[in-house]
Image (cartoon, rainbow, N blue to C red):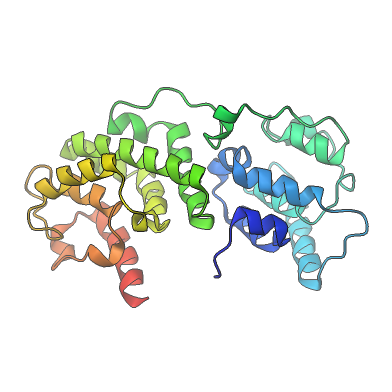
Length: 292
């Protein structure tokens, strides 16, 4: 897939890529994504549509497929992201949803009404809030277990990872990813073995993989990140090899994965050196990196 940014998605009218992103977006990250830059890009592209806009045959086909899937109702699992994707092919004023206050969540309802019912658009968020790429956050968790049970932070990790992946040139997103990665790394290094396994055996594991897949490891390290690197390097004297039976080595390896590209993670006997909750992700990520 050719690299693209939110800016050229707008100026280049690349609504197809944006629609595919929404179709494949995790359901529990939709609010975070809509309230951030990718939601703004989507609304911008919808606003460019007029009743005279000409769609390609492929776009008409996709719109028809989405409409067919939505016939089962807007409360079915996954329907909301399909509807957002279909917005990209429906000009403002050309869509009417019955009982939108029932069918739409509070974070989407004002924008739907502004786009399709002619209501006044919601007031823009202050710059400081917009830079957070989503809803206002509560205090950052003080433990890995606290992070792993915090839905807002889990969705923030996933949303920022996805945003960086599709638009690595966006400096605001990059800074947000850096900050979150650093804070999470500190929690990982401080966790005991039981807490580490419990956290990564749950939803945090999948969201952390999104961070590892984002490609942020290629970014040059900043001073605070260099200082963190010294911590995990000291804990892994044989990097990239490790002895998971030694206290702290597995924690350090998990942190290093978010700062070092997958091709450099290779272990001599991963099936013996890694626990099951990490081995599957290791095999997928390292295998893809080596074969590419």
